[in-house]
Structure formats: structure tokens, C-alpha cells
Length: 86
Image 1 (cartoon, rainbow, N blue to C red):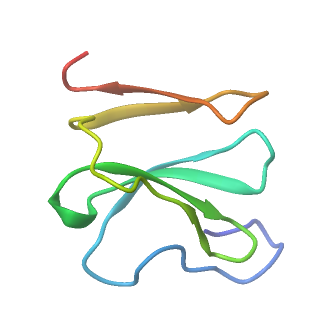
Image 2 (cartoon, helix red, strand yellow; image 1 turned 90 degrees about the vertical axis):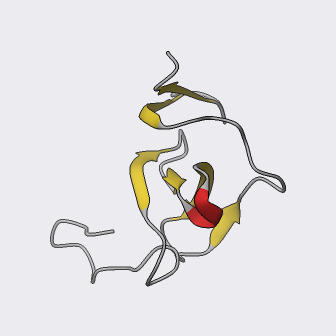
């Protein structure tokens, strides 16, 4: 994560071997929801943007397919995604 003249760059997630895509701010402005390809299947993970700690990840793989777009609610811990299956 790179802030505009606010602080140094922070590495979120594992450094090598895993991709993180479509970072989207949660409603509190402190957490980021992202799509990851860890384990070979796409899943959703949430990171604390201030501490770079993993906050939440599914306990079992989600069958969400290839995520194309991701939106979060402005008032609640909810998200909507658009995948290759429409």
C-alpha cells in the first residue's frame, strides 16, 4: 500500500508467490478487502491497512470463480463481486 506523502510503503500479505488483486477499502477506512490466489483458487481476504496484519480469510475455499470486479458497502461489512459467471 502506498500513501500519498503520508508514510512509507507497507507490504500487505506474503511477499512472494501469491497475487493480491482488486484492493477495495472497507467502510471503516482501515481495512482492505482483496482477492488472492493462494492455494490455486481465488478467495477473499481482509487486511488491516495500518498494521499490515491479516484480519480475515475464509476457513474453506469459496467457489467464487474468477473475480472481475469487487465493491464494498459504504455502511456495513458487506461486499458484492462480479465474476466470470456473471
